[in-house]
Image (cartoon, rainbow, N blue to C red; front, side, top):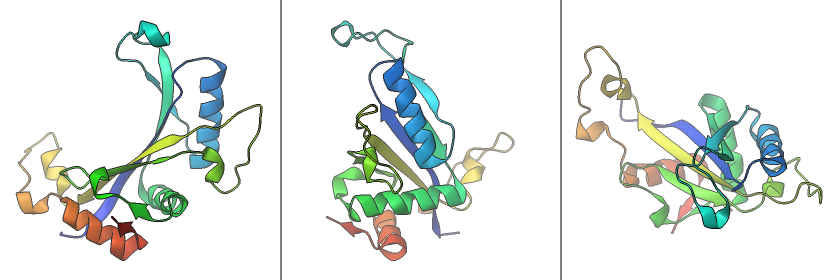
Length: 165
């Protein structure tokens, strides 16, 4: 019950506008992750950037299971297996960015498409988390069952040989 595992990996690509740029980003994300992305919409109107509330400005994909672990391993290799301590939250989740989509295997630069970056958010959990999320007989999760940054760092060092700075 104390074993940490990757619950999900959320890959987000914000392009700032809809149209051709967003459709290219969706195609790239579909190719890299193998899943169909979902469009994300603006929460606020930003006239300086030409963004309206409710307008599509990006896309995201949620990966779970084996796809998530394989994608995480590939992404960590791209950032040379280095994560900073400031990239962890208090519940042991962490995020990092990839500057260019062309770093992924099988992707090449195309002047028609351009270069897109992405954010990768990793959510870690321990077995038994369902008791705090289920509808019937929902219970509070004990503190020892929550993942903390130290457990996450230990998990990353053992499983993926990641260096935390």
